[in-house]
Image (tube, rainbow, N blue to C red):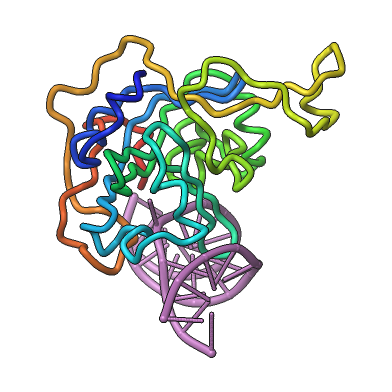
Length: 208
DNA sequence: CTTTGGATCGTCT
DNA sequence: GACGATCCAAAGG
């Protein structure tokens, strides 16, 4: 994935992101459901009211991860797609699990029975991949994990040097669906009518 | 399968 | 001080 491909109108970028891969360490899933948020042009966007500490990442360059906390307990992840000073983003709403299902299941808890329930929601996929506020501002296009200060036992490699598993956006060659399903966004109170949600038709891992 | 209500806290007014 | 780009358990069909 190239940064230029992610810089533009979120409504165009969103369907383009379908069938790309979101990965962290061994865990990976195919993006099957997204929503576009058009920043200053979109009353439902967190960036609608302008630059705040929370929304700062959205005002930066494209290809970075915007993570926010909601409902007092959940994290959700967005791909920033900002052409020149705009603050657009695409919310990742669901993944079809590809690899590291065992780690996902461990991270999600024993509640989950079916594989399709591991990542079929914006907060569920963050839980499955271990995405939290600590990942806000991550460059999704960075080639390699850079050595970081935090040396946690569970992330330390054989060498003893911490190798944080960073969230990445990958293209495994699967093209976006030629004609994705499209409809209204979910869970918002304003700009409800805009058809800026896109998903892979017939995919079972799309959110309920 | 669907519907309903509770949990819980960062963020901005 | 109000509310949210949600999830889950419980209960009913």
